[in-house]
Image 1 (tube, rainbow, N blue to C red):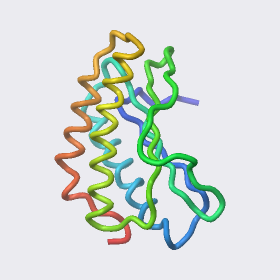
Image 2 (tube, rainbow, N blue to C red):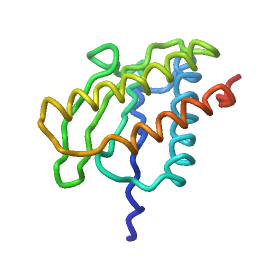
Image 3 (tube, rainbow, N blue to C red):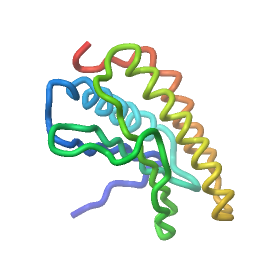
Length: 145
């Protein structure tokens, strides 16, 4: 099995079960994931990589935290895990504003984590990817709009 080339930003989704209330939140995260893939295809990864995991609550399980937080750091891959608890319902401009806020907070958390862990890694690629994503965000369409 062939592994895909590394990226500066990986976006993943954990859903606590499907429901009518979280459909738009799931669609928003999926749209952010596609946007990240598109931007990362144009920007070769250098330095720190970030795995951004969105936790969407559902009828089975909900995240046990709120907001955005750092998770573990995988030294072998130079990968910092960042986790975001998605509020539901989340729609339209509120979804766009939330996603933009998570992306900005991801950069802030990554900077703080690099400093706290005393890691000599560049964050420039992650910052470039997120800046381009924020630029393209207004034209992003979520599935349920």
